[in-house]
Length: 358
Ligand code: NAD
Image (cartoon, rainbow, N blue to C red):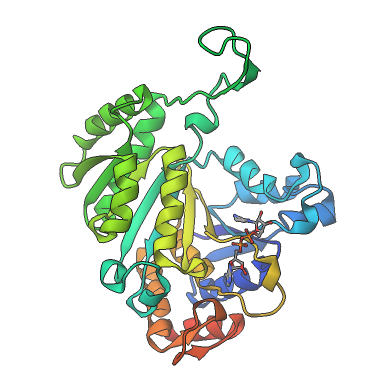
């Protein structure tokens, strides 16, 4: 059966890096229907909206979305609803993308890029699973008001509500256990159950869901400890599952363990397995159009798409092995270049991955 992919290159380096990922996808000779549409600032320039109805419709009708990046300083003065970033929020909302998967992999060849000692991080391979649609970012009530009571009565106060319903915790926990099953079988649930009621419920529900996955080793960690352990002994982790707020912070920390933003893919999934796949980095307007951007994060995002939305795990592995091979061969884009390696541009890196696919 033909599977549909919506390709949304976006702004800045988006089109350059997505082009390479699409070449790799086409080279696999799978029955894929690939359609492209504008998004972000590019879409605003063309159609007056960062997520035009036709782009949203294409995304909704596709099995998966390959997304480049959006944003450019030239759009910073637009009203919020027309800013490029609204396109991602709109897609997340419309498609119900509640599970954000961010692998942090440090290939031994790039171990020097990390600010940690190579012996601590070399070979790192962890997956941070962040709940994306709940928590304190979306809980109500929230606002800024005059405090109605308490010690600061009469003063201005800001307040937000941390909130998770059991079904929200349950569905992200299932994805956590299933992801662990596909990897090394270890799941660490991160919360702050010693202080927060929301976290206590989170922990109770995760423990309950664990009964369905006796093959996965579950552990729990407070978020402050997790932040420490990620820099002390990051290789101890396999999959980390956590809420929106803690995941926001820990996923960036884990990304920086690798030191190379141009290498990190990500996925956001909904309950039916439909997903949006994008590099973890932004649109890099400072290097757009120069042909020097690293396309590997986007190519690795395409590999995640094959694994998580299109059910082609062997092809996903084929791409990941090809990326590893080009690194072993010493090819590097400018962002990961070090002396003694071979500096190449965006298209040449794409060529090399295609060749390494075998
Ligand atoms: P950025 O990730 O775009 O760039 C940070 C630095 O990393 C820059 O020096 C850039 O040149 C470099 N870089 C990023 N990706 C690279 C790649 N593939 N190859 C080589 N070098 C790379 O972050 P920023 O500069 O803070 O943001 C730029 C724009 O991107 C802003 O408009 C921001 O809103 C947007 N942004 C979008 C997303 C997204 O689309 N999901 C995410 C983050 C930032």
